[in-house]
Length: 171
Image 1 (cartoon, rainbow, N blue to C red):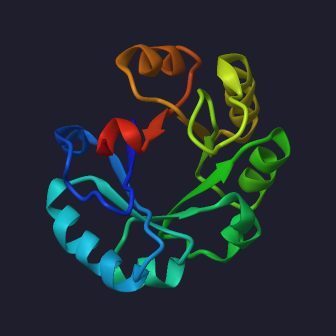
Image 2 (image 1 turned 90 degrees about the vertical axis):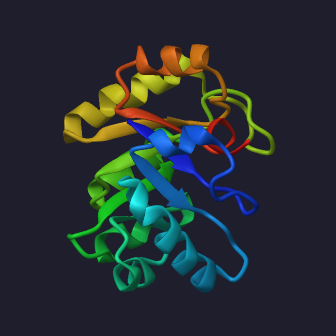
Image 3 (image 1 turned 180 degrees about the vertical axis):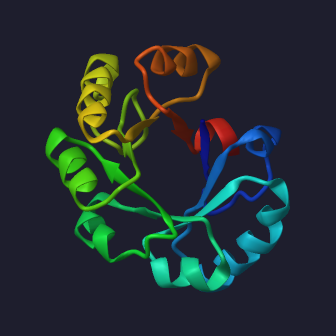
């Protein structure tokens, strides 16, 4: 699975985004208006579309899912069942909490060096996260610093459900 995460300046700047299975609109300025524009522009691509943290807006605009930041994991069980739920996680504690609150998937990050995202977890920690997720029969999506085909291959070899990236899809 390929999970594209937009940045605030990009809608369709990279042809790789056209191949993504999931696309998250992540922008923090004028979110509601831009989210509506995102939904109109991206719906025709056939990917599952996600909004960030606001499940009421996701329902209103017809998004397929919601992506919760790690600070909002506690709200996962409030999101309607018809939405696919993804949560950002950075530790074993967050990963378990997200699955226990109802996440369908988690992103686990940062795997590789990524600007302003702290120390990379690495492939060994990612594999450990995948093994924990198996206990919940849920999926892990690798995130953080994934910008090359070599990195994609390395994360996929850990047994993850897929990978997510901003720079791979949007730069």
